[in-house]
Each structure stands twice: as C-alpha cells, then as structure tokens.
Length: 215
Length: 243
Image (cartoon, rainbow over all chains, first blue to last red; front, side):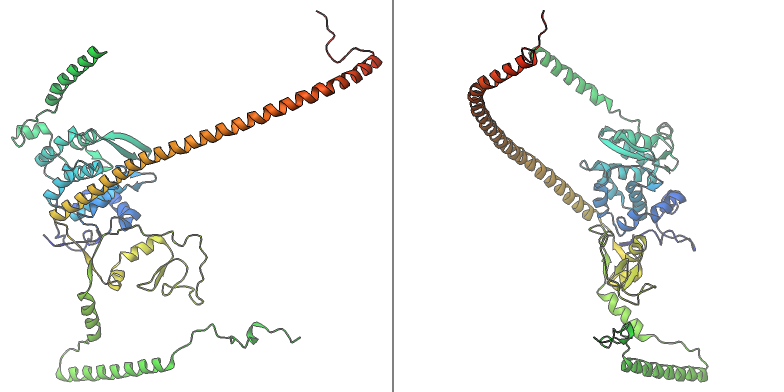
C-alpha cells in the first residue's frame, strides 16, 4: 500500500484509461456512491474546504465535530456525514483503523460513520460480526433529511444498515440476509443481547421491591 | 487669483503619472538575452540538422528550479482552521488603478499573496488554494501522509483528552458561576430591602406632614365650602340619596 494519500478524489475519478488503484468489491471505491450525489459532494464547500487533505488520523477531527447524520438536506445539499463517507472511500483505511473507530465509546457519530463505511466496503459475514455488537448502543443520534431533523438511535441505525437497501440516500451494496449466511455456515447463530437483559431485570425487580419496602 | 487649473494642467502629478513606468535598461537586457538564446538555438538546430538528428530544445533553468523546489517541499496537512471567506466583508478597500480585469494583481475579491492571483468568488478561491499551482508556490507536494494505526490511536486519545478537559472546565465553570450568581442576587436583595426601607420611611414622614397640614387647612376649606353650598342651594357634594 502506498505511503501517501491523495488530497482529493480527482485522480481516482479520472475516467481516462483503466483504473488501477485500490478496489472494493472489485471496483473503484468511489463508484459505490451514485454519480449524482458524488458530484454534489465534490462540488460542495465542505468537501473542498474541510475534507481536503485529510488522512485517516485527521479525519477524526472532522468526525468528532459531526452534529447529525443523513444523506442530503435542504435543497439537495450533501451532509458533512456523507462527505466524510466519500472521503473514507477515497482513503480506504486499513481494517484495524476501522475497528479502532467503531470500538471507540466516546464519540457516537464516529462510530456511526465507521459502521456505515464498513457496511459499504466489507464482505457480508464480517459486516454482521462487526456491526451486531453495536446494537447494544442506545445513544441518540440526529438524522437530517430533506424535510428537517429526526431523532434516531445508534442501534436503530445499525439495524437499518443490516436490513435496508437504501440508507442516507445511498444504495448499499447487496448483501445476503443473516439466515442465508447461517445456512451457508459462514456465520454462527446470533447470540441475543436479550439474555443479559433478563438477569438485569431480576436485579431491577429486587431493587424495586427494596424501595417499596422502604416506602 | 490665478486661473483654475484643469486636470491635465496639474504640474505636481503630471497628466500621465497614473501610467505604468518601465525600466528601459532591464528590458533592453532581457531583449539581448533573448536574442542570444535564439541565436544559440538556431545554431544548435542547424548543427543537429547537419548531423541528421532531431533537435530537442533543452530547458535547463526550469529543471533546476523544479529540483530546488522539490527538496524542501512538504506534504499537505489537513486544514487546522476554517478559511476566513468573510474576512473583508463590509470593508472598504482601495484597489490600485489599472486592475480592471484578469487575475494578476490585487483587486476586489479574494487575493492569494503566494501566487499573486485574484478571485472574484469564494468557490474559485478555495479551489485555487487546493490547486497544484498554489501548492508548488507555497512549497508543498501534492500528497498527504498516510496515517498508520499508531497515528490514529494517538489522535483519538488526544481528542478524548480534549473532550474530557472541556467537560471538566464546563463543570467547574458552572459551580463557580452559580456561586457568583448567588452572591450577586444576595447583594441585590439587600439593596432592594434597603431601598424599600428608605421609601417606607419617606412615605411615613410625608404622610405625617400631610395629616398635620390637612387638619390645619380642612377647617378653613370646609367653612368656605359650606357657605358656598348654602349660597348655591345644596348642603354639600356628597350623595343625598336616602335609603
């Protein structure tokens, strides 16, 4: 892998000749995003000013500052979230770096950003293995749409990534369902997070009883 | 009084002082250099033709310049701050005469000092700041250092620490501010109490004065009124309605 990154996406989108850079799903990573939204991103001020010259480390500065997620808002302006997704597709960070992003507890928008990238770029079994544990994260996130802000949660967003075809105005690559992968023996059956909750509930019940007694 | 002078009679400035002046010697030297270079080139071309080869012009000075530039150039770093596009908003600027069109030289709009170029809209200006031309003028290469896992970890730890410090500072501030606010409110309350006390005191003294004056005057007033009322044919201004 090269020791340097490009400051922008110009060279990777050069349509003359054959593309010989890094690939995802055996294609140019930037083409995972549709042409229209990709061009809107590249024309946007955020891309030119804030997303220019980032690498996988300095990308964190921008990801930490995110206030909302979403595809396009207002009059079809791309959100900073989607701009950073394109940036990550261009940078193509290593697996370990992405795990570092996802497993961080402090910054929820960084986690969501990395989860979205993983859904776009990684093979299906890996996606399930990496993203399913994140469903235990119930923090609130803001989703900005064409009509305004909406409230959603990290676990809800992860579920959308795993089940829906189109999230944040981007068509996700096709992925077999969990059941299909289990039949192919590529995935173990999922261990439900609920089993933990039951024991918790017992604890809660006891505490409530104690409180009742005190009253 | 002398005759008023027109614009073109102004001897102090000279009627054509706004025009550019040229250093004639410099341009003469440049012309001589160019002639010598062309003569040399012609000679080389002729010799190449005699030898049956294709003439390839050498551009030595350019190559030298590029090499020296490349040595101390550094990789691009991400922007630390936002580009201040509204820096000159609502400001009056003096634009030099003769900069009517074109991008060379300072004019109205966004000006890049490194490249001596002027732009009339922000998007063009930002694009220029990202361009190879600007990068080479400011001694940068067209590449970004690729981040390793260690760099990412370091950055993340730093950001966490920063967030932690900010939260802490805010908490500390909140307690302090509450205490300050309490002090101020206490002071205000005392002041208000004092003012109320003074007002009450004043009101009481005034009332006492009024009552003594009234008791003195009321006799007189009543007598006059009774006389007047009797003259007018009624007992007083109070109601006469019987129940």
